[in-house]
Image 1 (cartoon, rainbow, N blue to C red):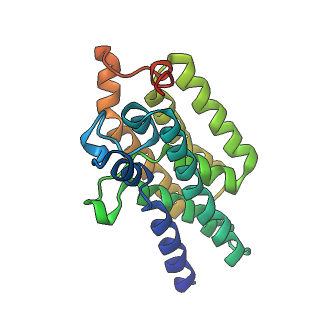
Image 2 (cartoon, rainbow, N blue to C red):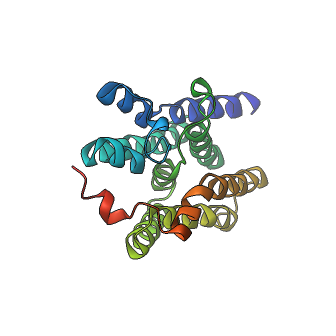
Length: 202
């Protein structure tokens, strides 16, 4: 069982460490995306800095980063569904804390969506709807982001997953609030980029 857990953690983390935003920033603009815009290595900042098409590409790949580890680990260990769930959560952690970028990556929202869509399509769809409804409803991505991460430990508990998964989900929720603290402050100050404004970028 220890070997299975280690393989699960390795698969999840390595997928999560694929920093799409950083790679595109280097390829397209020869810059570190974390030094521009909001400073976040994620799809929303890529839209701001590089444009909509690159932002959508970043989001799609980041979703796959959460989806594929779940699919792979589920295929490897079909009798232990909690391992597939754990692989997805570790992919989120890898996205947030990539070892080769000084553990400073993105915020993990798209990767969270991919993880949940792969684990349970209905649950994933619910999270996507909540995220989109809040982001477009209040016109701020950060509001939807912190909400879905807050929902994660609740969903993990309701799925009756092991305590370790529940603790990890709670830790990710706390990290999400910390990572979004600057966004929430900018919302209060009226300086945060609106969703509709971001999508007007080409």
